[in-house]
Length: 417
Length: 115
Image (tube, rainbow over all chains, first blue to last red; front, top):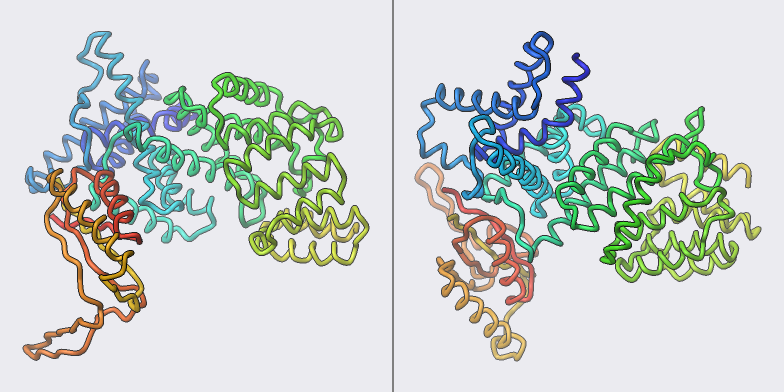
């Protein structure tokens, strides 16, 4: 029973908080009220059973709690209350589902969906630093505790707590709107939501420091958020692309790390271990995106990942297709990391000498602090027999890695050299 | 409605030669932006400032007043002017700021006013 309440919490906490923020225009009040409602649920549900619409139950209970609290704190005048309100969309209905007929209930469901989007756009507001966006998303939409987020990002609890407080305060002081951006701003604003979610995923996928390579919780949370976003904005192909990219990447999670915790490269992974269900879901999304024909960077990266998923062995990968996709991606995002990944595909198709030549086209200083650049270079150099240079490149890559699992991998590669 | 300050920042060594064609172009662009603000009812107040070297810092402590040659912040970047605007929310203010940055050809800072 407690497990099911935990599941309800995971699924509903973001939605409920989002609705309460709209109703009361106050993030802290919304958070506290939703937390209180879950405490009541933990007391009541084991005996009474989980209600048919647990999210609605939580929202209604939280709303009533918040109203009670506002009444108790009657020292707050209407004016101070008004001053504390976020800028909410005045046209949105503020009622609970209970007293309404079916048609109204559908409207209400739409409003809840919009609330979640409003909260995503608020949390990922470009006026906030990216680390604050990520922390706010995990706190408000994921319902993670501050210390959980701090642990996940390997920062002190106090730092993370301050980051969240400052972010909320900035949004409040600046009268940040609680609304879905208009069509003129939407692409850019959506981009910042997608980027924040992807950052949560990549942080979960390769922790930037610490001993474990994969932080399942963050990856899972990022996928859950992307799934929600893709459901809420089904016409936004980049949202689908992001979900597809993460699902396809997640499908390889199990085979990415050996039993002893060491890293296994894509080429060396046991492909029978790849999660077929995640792959087919990801590939279906990629096909949907192709049919829509509105390509974007996340969709192309997902397509590249889908090509890898198609291949039963590394040798049978359609590398020419991968290169075409990287070329396409580079047109949209002409950055050195894309060029680096392309050079890896070139090395697979045409050999390490060609790979080195492709790497040579990248301005070295632009990637000097980027570990994968030195790791790829070291690999190519080894394969063409320039072993001294390879050793130096491995040293640089090892120096730049703070993740112990990755460092061990590189150290072994260097030794095998 | 809320009020925001949009301030313009530039290198302190920057001296405007108002007769230069570039300065003339910026003056025209800023003038057009001012007009747009006024027509939209977003205009509150605006001022372009003399260089930071013209500033004086005044302190009052227990009734004693001291004055020293400014500016207050000894940084390379100094505020060159500002707008106070009225906007419905942050996004509206940022949209104005984007136009301000384009008009004056440099970065601007957006900061909400209290109350």
